[in-house]
Length: 516
Image (cartoon, rainbow, N blue to C red; front, side, top):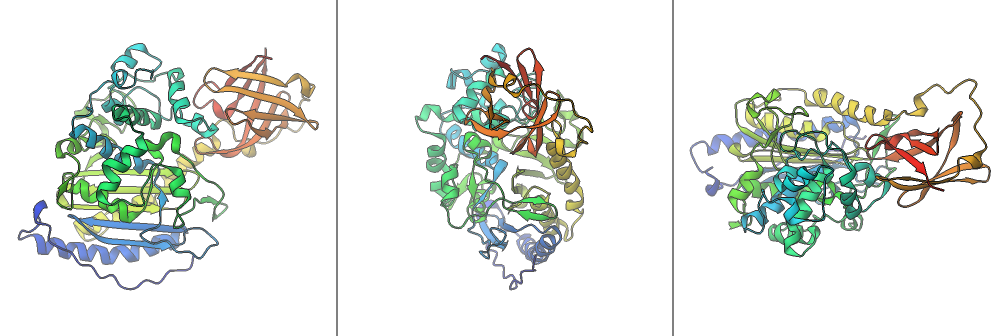
């Protein structure tokens, strides 16, 4: 990528008396901030040149002021349109702390409680275990301690099921831990917590988000509706890194998990939300969200560094999850809040705050997650606190994301990476494989013979995929999705009227039974 030349940064830092910054240390803090911002611009340009990410936007909030908001690079490869502070990105899981802020607005007015049971708020919802169904709360879902497995429901979203359909089918997902005691990151658990919390209002999640937060603090480009992102002319496209280049191949519509991952926004709007966080729920001098309700989202609820029952005082590395936030400590013991967002199909985001320092930063990238937004945010915070970067965060984060992507691409046998059999066994007569097959969890799929080849139709949209013979009763098909990767996957006819779709087995057994 050609280096983008930028003018020098001019920073104006205003005193914010109501957050206690108009003290003798104010001048020193402002000097720290200005020095950090000057280093940040060069670091971002250097990082983009090294990583080749197409576009990036960053904002920094100090006290109640946005002191930096800038875009770099392009919105879409092959298109000269530049990213700026108003460019809208899909923010993926940064949607979660945004969602907990919205629920906090309802908690603060007494319309719902963090400890309200879902069975009371949404009687039609069920987990596989009856006792868990009766006991699980909004707090449990927002802190990922409901017992649902990591990713439960995500593959249903890949297939195209709607939000109500997915939340209804969650009852068929086996729980993997004791409710309230084990951490397992669940998009659709948090989604149910949010949807249940707003049911009493009689409005949709998207309407409540707009009324209770976005419209009140001027987040005019933020939405939980994919259509609003899609219709915005100033939007960043998604890009996957493939064979050394970023390519705009996919779209990612996440309406079904909107509270957990379906928001879109720009850094100018997100800076306003960060200001609200840093100022105890106030914005522009107005108490938008009750301070106590918002503060609760910042408190550690469960140890998140391991998936299992761990006492809070024995949590490895002191990594916790709050209500929609990762909750940790800085090297000198200050509270640090953060969250990353990632779509493997092409976006990566991060937000970090140190409330005691009155500082927050958000970074949005229109490319496959590689650690760039985390590196930008954490390096800036180091610049601000210590005057220099304490660690090479790309070197730390890069391998983690590389492993995550690699594991996804290899899930359930990536046949593109397997050595094909030199003498494959012949398939049976193709007509013998045809028919309708059903899974309680996934629904019905159809297999038919078309022009001498097998065709697979997956539920619920009946999208069809051509099957290629591999060996004996095993066939393959190309499938690209957020949770099962971009690769060639296997379909195995097991006999007895059963067929295994391997890439669906990551969430359930992936076995369908023939019904006709």
